[in-house]
Image (cartoon, rainbow, N blue to C red):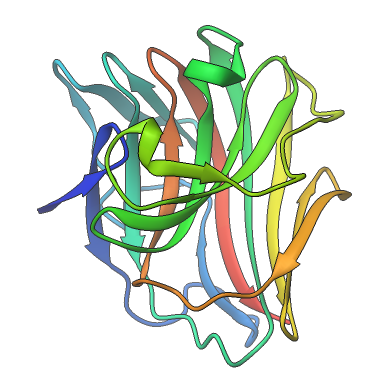
Length: 205
């Protein structure tokens, strides 16, 4: 399994081939009924992770840690990335302990939809492995209505030349579409935070 450098973390990546759902518009879907997509299951100094009961549990035991899949999205088309996640435990402060969805990544360069148990969320552009290499998009850092003790649905929706970012169908932020750096997408747990991921889906609109 190839190891990919990441924001304050190690991100593992596997290649996904073909559709995993009967709907023609769905490019990728994993509800963690099994480990068909080779997510990391481990218990070491960086991460504790396992699939259990249709949920992928991800704990960063030190710095933030994430998991990635390599997926070729046709960015000329409209698409949506959707993930249902619960913050199980950890510091709730967004400033230093945020978790994330990321997409369009290559090595250290990528886009991040961040969130934390205090209800704050943001959109960031990162070009290195540390927080000081990330720029928060102006106006995106906001208090949201996400449920801190329950599952929340996060969506990144590209329509035409615009991105929209939604939490539980509530619009957080919009910005112009910008080209991908690469084909990695996934999720990351903030420093010493545990996430429960119910599903990850990518579909064309």
